[in-house]
Length: 504
Image (tube, rainbow, N blue to C red; front, side, top):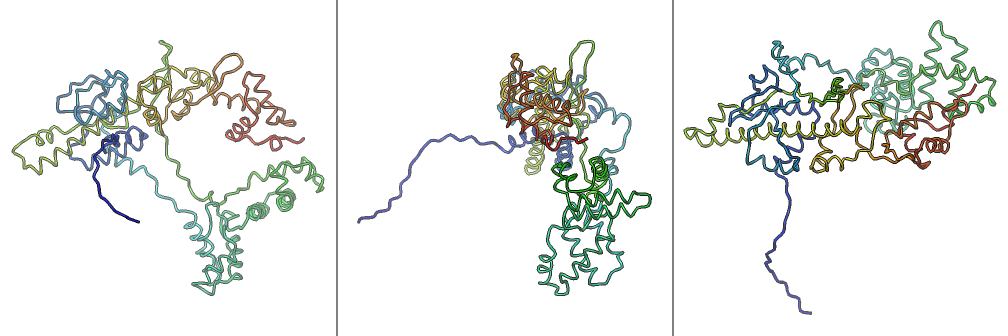
């Protein structure tokens, strides 16, 4: 067989679409929630010498008319002459041209008002208002365990067990597995020592229930703690212990008649015991750790104009400082007398500052345009709540604005709107839907609200099954399958009928 290897060169044409780093930056800024945008601006102010806060605009409303020189580009000034062209095409042209911008008529003046009031530096205020980091669960339990009056080997084993606690304060690993694992480094930690340490841990550490190996054990430890307290009904807690120890599965499945049959307790006694169980926790470890929940800062504020009978939207940009490109560094970047390397460095910073400001303006415009469509299409929600929500796919909004659907998705991602009905995520207003028997379009969120109303109005002694709920929805003009009812019920956190049943 004749085998030959040949090397050939071929020329061909191919078309590829690539995003420049600046294009990617613009899309990232469009997707950022207001808090992330604040952090990004703070970082840029520290790293870019050509970017600065415009003190002139900081001392007046950002929505007022401002004359901007050819070499100044200011955040908070938006081009109102947009014709709805694709936002990505506009982003692509930013790199080569920067035109004079106009004032953003929707901007707020809260940031400038704070500057006029002579407030302190906002970074220092933010740092001063941050609470000290709380200790995690392991640190807090270790601190309590350090005061335990136990032998050295039990103290050491206790520290090992504390290291294996999960976020709920329970031990995920069986003691025999922990003993095998620890024996590789310390033969003194045996299963017997670990058992003594666990008993001491459960007795000495607060809140009660920490250090348990199972949910049942965790609950029983808490029952013992409650029953030891003065003034508590010992007999009532004895019934709680009996139910948890012997009938926990029946309680979870709401099989109260089965418990009545297997015990000497009445329905009323069982219901009283269940009421006491509400004092118990399945996650005692979370009671000692402050869970950090970041505050929600809305990107848009919507208010009702009673005189015009319309809902109006304003960007909540008062927390974003008005930025501009430094005139001094702009002049230096064009000064031929400046050393070439320094001029190139300054020019790069000037260009980056311009691009950042333009990207922020672009973000504001995109968010506001999407919100205006929401106000036009979802007025029913502002007047009626979830029942008034209409189907609104993102593709429809994208077609109306003449932008790509990805632009709409990024514009609403992780952003919130402050409304007369509270603060809600922008994504809530986008969903599919169905047509009722009367020909009305109803969003899936509205269907869920109707389902919730049906369940709330049912007879607690005879709760509706999923098929019965589907039939009740059909009576209201909404025809959906039983499996869809199950899905929506689960999304709403509504348990099945057998768990909703109330026994008299």
